[in-house]
Amino acid sequence: MNQTYSIRQKVKQLSKILLPILITQLSLFGMNFFDTVMSGHSSPVDLAGVAIGSSIWTPIFTGLTGVLIAITPIVAQLIGARQQHKVSYQIFQGILLSIAISALVIVFGVLFLEQGLSLMTLEPKVTQVAFHYLIALSFGLAPILVYTVLRCFIDALGRTEVTMIITLISLPINVALNYIFIFGKFGLPAMGGVGAGIASALTYWCLLFIALGVIYYRQPFAGYQIFRVWHNISFATWFEQLRIGVPIGIAIFFETAIFAAVTLFMSAYSTVTIAGHQAALNFSSLLYMVPMSMSLALTIAVGFEVGGRRYQDARQYSYLGIGMAVCMALFCAVGLTIYRETVASIYTTDPVVLEMTAQFLIYAIFFQLSDGIAAPIQGALRGYKDVNVTSVVAFVSYWVLGLPIGIALAKMTTLGPYGYWIGLISGLAFGAIFLFFRLYRIQKTAVLEQRLIA
Image 1 (cartoon, one colour):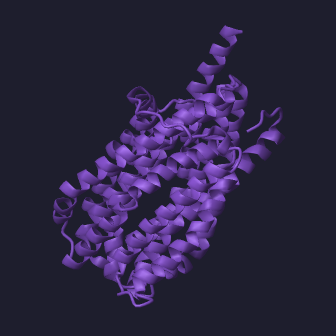
Image 2: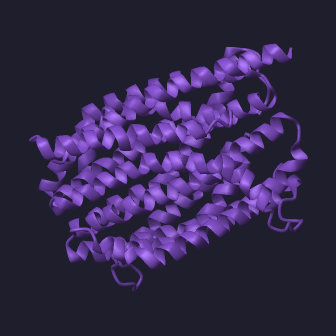
Image 3: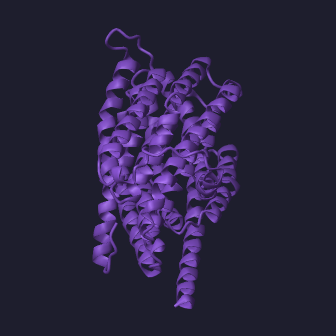
């Protein structure tokens, strides 16, 4: 990151940070995308099983990733304040914290996963696929969380193109492993959706080993000597990281869990409905990588400027990012409107599932604008280390307002399963409005404080 002095320079630097992050996010999500698509071509049962498994895995994984994202603003502000000597210690403690978190989650899964799945009214074969898919994924939890910490470190230095290259290398590995394990190649049995979980877990280990090699041997990362000095566990540092990370993780969990909750409500409908819903939701999540990438880019840019107490620059980055994200969201919405039937055909050849998917994609179009506003605002707020209110907004918008609206429309009108999607859209819209006013207040307060100090 370098200090900028004009809007043009800011657009150039933000774009330079954003593009590699976007490619990285698309590649990371591509693993889940190919899990779903390739499982769908195995059978509708495998698609439904992966859908249920993903609905449990995604909020847990993204929530935990959100907790560890605290590393990004911490490191960005340290660099902005020219305190690089403190970075390596924060990263090392973040790695230890990620390992501890993964161990706790696995223990929790061992105790409650089977019982939780048994509470759903699913076909036995769908339950079996979901259970073993999640078991397979759990073997990749620790490496992907450690990789998240390393990625936050790399990105906070402004070297987002490095994580892009790492992820691009891993994506074809995931596709190849999916092909082998899902369809049974090279003498292995066809495992369907369960094979997708095995492939993803192995890919997570590949991601970790590549990142470790880069950080250990390549500059400027090797200069921080993260692995050359062993540090004991510092609960005080863990608390500092969790104080910022937990609200971020909770906010992300509330947002992703609402989609998971809707998928679980869908279990009351037929396997075809579950498959169509999951296919449409999977593609919507793919498009969400655009505003989410802008969110991550703004955390880096805004955090760097806030660390240097350049609050006017931080404000300019915020609104540049929101404007760019809205423009990209409009482009995605128009494309989805025109090509939704083509998109549906990517996921399945079953005509009934294909028609159901295309219908759900109509509602996915309206996700784009709300996401295009809310996600970058969240990223800007993280750059200010303002995270507590965001988690409250997420809970109120999605669970107090959005979900009840969806349930009411699904149960009390003829919309049926589509009512849940209208509820999701409502929750996203409420969140975007609330977060915008929060960002405006934080920026105003920061500028006033700067004037008082001056």
